[in-house]
Image 1: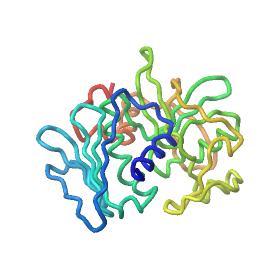
Image 2: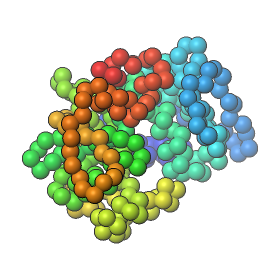
Image 3: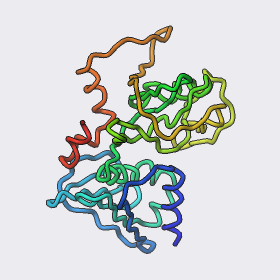
Image 4: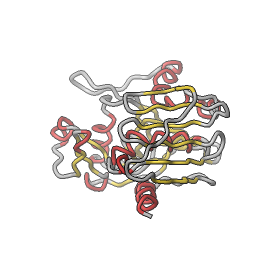
Length: 263
């Protein structure tokens, strides 16, 4: 019951409309028991995370920091999680560094395609997506836009999907996470400490703005930090694709859904 409550509360906090058929089957091993390391070919790994592909193209993730593994169904938005008390004791780090990665892969099977981007609607009603990696200025720009009367959905975690023939981008609701420099620039105080990331988190409402869940973007922006003044310049189409791919990097590691993802 405690594990079910933790997972449910996390999903509900994100407020993402989940695809039809999405499910998580979860179990907790007893204290001190092992979580078996999965088999298969490693297709992606970091110091803490490994993603393996099985012969049937099911994907399994394993967390090295505190034992946990999760298997993504080959074609359906379904997850099977086996975790340890030590992994759950990591709190937000369990979700940020491990479980969200597997959820992203499962959501792809339900037609929601992850994009590392901020989303916003300007005061004229036009929609924007700001694509970029860490340190590109997405969060600071999103916070600034919120202060200037824009509606903001997320500074980081968004999902592409089709709505009536158009590409829509829906936000996973989370706090805009600002480093010290961003807080000083915007003169932002308060917020919620995110100590593991060295940041303070602010919902758009805490910055005087409004949250918007889904946008249909007319503009794609690639923020870059540097220089004395801000300016805009057009980006060639081929360069757009080159810059987007690192922000949708899960498309690179398996064939399933890749054509739809890129389209």
